Each structure stands twice: as structure tokens, then as C-alpha cells.
Length: 84
Image (tube, rainbow, N blue to C red):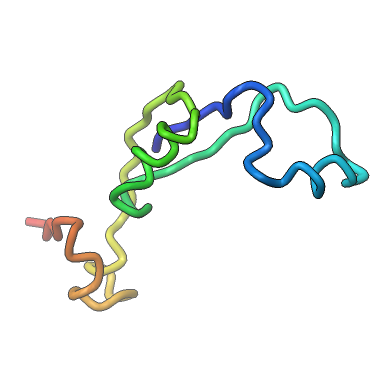
């Protein structure tokens, strides 16, 4: 997982909606979390959009393909590591 902070003053094309929203107020930090299950180009997109990576974590979860929740053919870009 990688956490990002939005660039100062950016509203990402939603100025009208955000300014009129009843909950609108100055935003000091806007978090975006991504992971290896996100699109392969997501990280580069966030950085190009002005976000700054501030943290990187390694989280280990059971692969739903091994548990039988998903077919083994899905997510071919992610290696399937079978338990020994």
C-alpha cells in the first residue's frame, strides 16, 4: 500500500461541486491509498497528478484465487504463489 498527499490547492476539476458542498472547508491533507491490485499505471498517474508518496507498507493477505473465491485465471499480472 502506498499513501499519497494531494498537491496544495488542487481540487481535481470539481471546483463548483466542492465549493457548494455543505461540508466544504480547507483541506489540509487528502489521502489516496493504492495497492498492487490497482491498475499497473495507477502509481505513475497519481504522481503525474501532483500527489506525493509519503508512506509505503507491505501487507500480506490470502490470495482469493488460492482460497477458491476467484478463478485462478484472474489477475494474470499478479504471480500466483501456491503454499508449499
